Amino acid sequence: MTEVLQLSRNTKVYIRDTQSDAANSSNQGWEIPVLDGYAFSQATESVEITLSEATDSAGASRRGSSKFNTALAPVEWSLTTYARPFKGVGTYTANSGKWDNGAGIQHASEEALWAYFTLGTGLNYTPGNTTGNSTWADAITQNTNQMLIDFTGSNKPALRVFELYFILGAVGTGEKSNYKLVDTCVNSVTIDFDIEGIAQLQWSGYAKNIVASNTAWAQANTITEANVSTNTLIRNRISTLTCTTSNTGVMAGFANTYNIVLTGGSITLENNITYLTPEELAKVNIPLGHVTGTRSISGTFKAYLNDDYSANSSGKLYRDLVAQTSVTTTIFQLSVNIGGVGTPRVEFIMPTATLEIPTHSIEDVIALDFNFKAIPTTLSQTDEATIKYVGPVFA
Image (cartoon, rainbow, N blue to C red; front, side, top):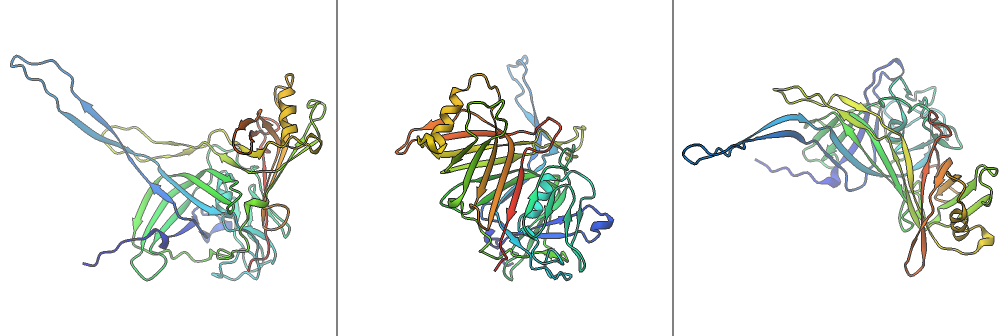
């Protein structure tokens, strides 16, 4: 028998939409380019029964135990992608890997993950065809200038689910192994500002169960456009942060705009999902499904302490924050341009974000850490943030 070992570098990852509706009868698929370090696993939950009794007349005591499997835990998965905005070339044909019929529409290689992060249950996706373009209702809007991601459709008790495939051995001619994660949902995504690196997104979530087989991915009409292009990658070093006072009446004492030069930081978006599993006796219970929790968008910005107050820099913002004792919630509009003002870039616009008083990091060059949280204008709104992708024509 020939030994078959699978190498992680030969893995490809795919998403397949499984909600059948008139607009999506083709069960659209996407190839998601991922980095090294992906993971997926499903544990077994169990209980152990032990004895605790006194000795019998012979001085003996039973000390045995028993163990029962009670349930399968939900699958936990994680993967990392680059942020890759681009303009599609258009001229859609079946099985060409393209998004749209029209040329120049803004997309991203990881676009489907963003859509499932923000989409509630419902009929929300229409694939492209030979006469039209793909659309995501209540999640993503696109034109030739930008791709906008918002949370309009995310105030739902559950998110739209999909199938997530890890195809081991997909690259090469060896044996292939197919791991399908059923009823997958996206729980969180984090983007870090490592100024020496390329913009990356760290994704994680849950699924109902894992199905393993040796069938290769054979999904027709899988979108792969621009996945191998490198001119769509974003350099973190040229990122910028603008901090604007959103209400000068309440926020008296603050400058209108602070321009902060970043040295690092991160933004984390959370759906705070929990999985429900029955607890019936005499069986191994299977996870039922997920429910969403509080949506949370928060993170940290890192900057050197710049005491040029005339420039409304980091030191001026620190001084203004610590001087406020009557403002209980400091509201700013934060605009982060990852990649600067050119293309490709990703912008996070948070119109009502709160800033905590930053902490000092005493190093060779003294720095400040600004913790923030994006909040909606009211508790029932979904306007904490808008994410804008702007990419070039890929090469």
